[in-house]
Image 1: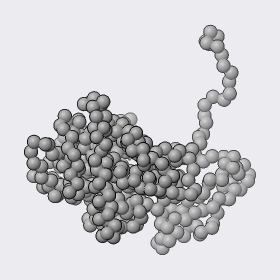
Image 2 (image 1 turned 90 degrees about the vertical axis):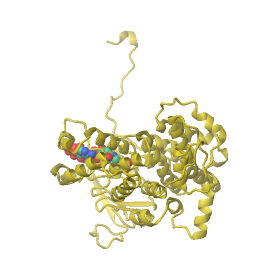
Image 3 (image 1 turned 180 degrees about the horizontal axis):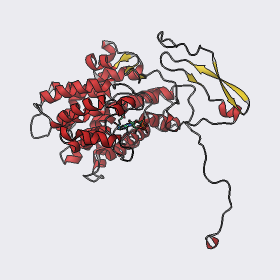
Length: 440
Ligand code: CMC
């Protein structure tokens, strides 16, 4: 452990002993560069014929990774060591992609080359456009995303051989480049407007806004303030270590599945309201609360154990402090509202007051429930012009690079094995089959 301020708990090479059935079993303790040490129990079953039990993986490290670090108690998020605040303030999304994929910030030449490669993969195979018409118009765009991204493997056969580093690189660039196009097409299909082809002279975020909001019959000028906000939203969502969708991508990829199929699996997982669907749920909740005077009623409901209602956009499995992304998102939210001329947004009033009250309420303080990124992202995305059904789609566009970087890291790890958890079986013990005529 290199963190000088941390209490000295273990030394490199130290072992943890587990007492079981009167016997002691030693397991190595592995230090990270920062963050908690881990006890390597991979030999536990082989030596003690026992499994560990950790539903929800609250105390389990599923892999070794060099990509993203979170200190949930301090509210710290680092991509390859760089604080999220610095990347969001000074960087852009494509250099963040480069950083996550290759481990270092690009030089000017590397950046120009990477931007060029991504830009030249933005178009989608023309036949894929017809794929969309197989979906109902009222399909949720996330359903379309799962289907279309999964289908990429049927169109790009030359980048599905995961044992070939070149094909892995091509698949990675293709996915980062095509996700905005696929997402914008899902949106256009949903609203019944013609698909807009990418414009390669535009930067990543501007091009995405163009594909979503331009129409062929009139000129569309991208607002640079809104494009910068979009870019920042992409940076904030780019990776978040071993969250549910990333773990899904890694697990799917551990079987050797092609990268397009793995990313489709990640999108499916992201869809849930406890994960990527939370920004949609948070905005719906703010709308349902409607006015500041109704907040106490909803706070009481969130605290009531018999009521399933939760304050959406509050709480996090890892952050037990203010989510650092939420602070940047709150600032971005104010910038976007000012730019689009929304001076008094009742939803923002409700959000600010809800946050103020919850941060003082004993229940939320005691359980360390702080606003997460989704609390302000819904209001921001709405002001940018997106319908709520697109919110999780935008999250999937941004997170694709994180999924791909983590997938690539896993494939390139010589210790990589197929992911195969075990279980605590509590079902019936062995019993004999009874023919249906004899069953009571
Ligand atoms: N409102 C009210 N109570 C809450 C909330 C909330 N939003 N979140 C957690 N709690 C309570 C929960 O009832 C439990 O109480 P008790 O210990 O008395 O049973 C305690 O806090 C711990 O909650 P948990 O469900 O055991 O914690 P978790 O780590 O399994 O869940 C979470 C994390 C994010 C799923 C949860 O906080 C939640 O459902 N929040 C609302 C949904 C949300 O905003 N999700 C976005 C997460 S950030 C984006 C992302 O990374 O995808």
